[in-house]
Image (cartoon, rainbow, N blue to C red; front, side, top):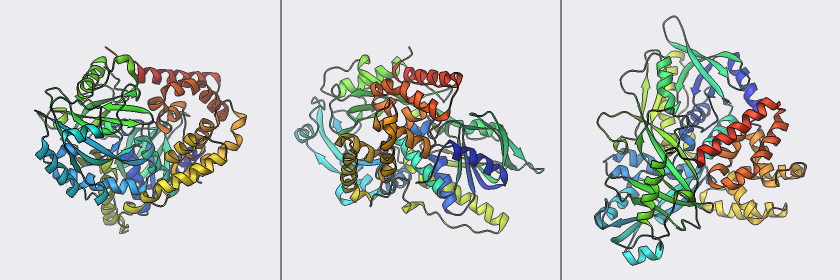
Length: 551
């Protein structure tokens, strides 16, 4: 198993400064990760700089679905549905451990957006456009059968339901698995490095960046033949640095999700439903790891995209929708265990409400030569990456005479994805769970590790041998040390929030173990008291952000 650690990061920064790259990618979210992997597998010498942690922006704050965007059919965005719909199965086959098919129930009610006919036609079109395999094609249910399928649906006015397949994912882990695969292929990658300005040649063409290492404080310059701005909500900040922010600009909208224990919100199916308000919006409620998460809002956002926060208004909006849609005891604000919020970097369209703005991606190419990719969806990351790299290699071919290969990512297994394909994944889980149990783990713990790490689970199991030396329990010890040495975990929040999702779906456990995680990392990295205290403070701030709501 290849190392992907703090040391790797330091080595990569030195290498990136030693000679010009073919391509430098700025941004380590899902789009930047995808571009890095696509370019590297075509033979380009590639580096990537991320100013925070991988997926720390929008890419860890989605609805955590690799889905085809059924609602875009209402907006007649046929090409968007067709492209991202077909990508779902590709993303799944390349990483079955982080992407899970699940049946989604779409109930329709008297006076709602969808009726029996429109649902049937819409889902049939969806199946056709997305080239859904036979076993996952939609079917329709009459009201009584819909209630048998999901007894907690509101009965009043129910006219039936459509049932179809979507894919639940762990967005932060999908991003890091793409990045790890790019590293295995030879890409040079560093997180917590901020681009402070662009460097230009005498003709005004961009030829590099000046950066600051946010961990060590060191500065330097990296040169590259081509630079792609894939900074998500921050793409316009980089365009301003490049003096090329003109024409189309970003329009940020905020999305909020709430996490509630399944004992309080006991649905057994994923549900996609009309909000009971006059705002033409829809919501998802999705079971996961003993919890149900529900969202999302879609409101204009003007503040700092780093931490958009959750307001009581956001919480009441979502809970009111849930309480009117499901036949369960009323969910109160105090039942919300955790939450997350993020911003969508959409391309501004004058006069449109947030929910109406297209999710299409677009590539901007400035006079200086800087490429910027904006818009798009998590599901379509691979095709977006392909389009960007196609443009990059076309320019390089004209300028250098070198012809690069076409994309290779359609059937490229991501890190952890070598499990024998999607159809074999459950067999793989059974086999590797038994291995974990032989090493002393409970069936539940072993199974969870296999689902999280896929074919990398043997490396995670390898840390169990030294776990008795720590106050952390063996599972957390093994996950943390795997993260430190193979997933470039730099801060405790990297582990607690993005690599393990414990701050979202097991927040009580995350709070309990956070002092031990900080102690373990302090010992590993030999932090002094000031650094350790700063990390402790950041962890506390994150717990507050995920559990407290502003008025």
